[in-house]
Image (cartoon, rainbow, N blue to C red; front, side, top):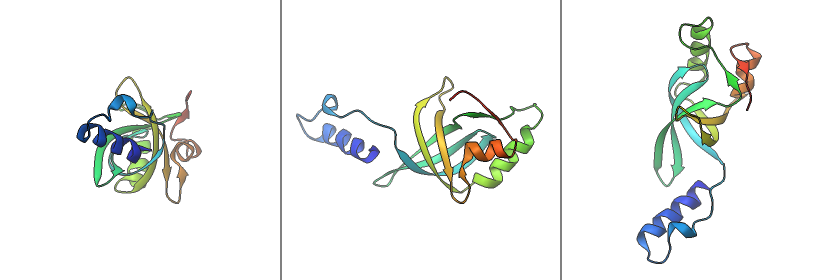
Length: 131
């Protein structure tokens, strides 16, 4: 869907009569990304491929789980575990909205591990929160 939207935007810029007002609404979809930096146990930066050699960088927060913040017990363990799991690795991200800090709230799928939220909860590195 992102590729379709990108084509509509480009058409709107290049062709008269095809405007952004005619563009269909975006829906959530899975995007491929590579993690570049882990901020803490539930937040990381990633380069996201939008297709057509378009890559954007975004900050993502794992939806439905909260891990300890800096200076809280368990912070180092959670961050270190997620760094070992994710840094430089490909992930599948489904993000539909941002939080008040500008982070994309996302479901994250990791090859050979599956759902990152469940992985954090199973290892008691985080606690569930309202999705």
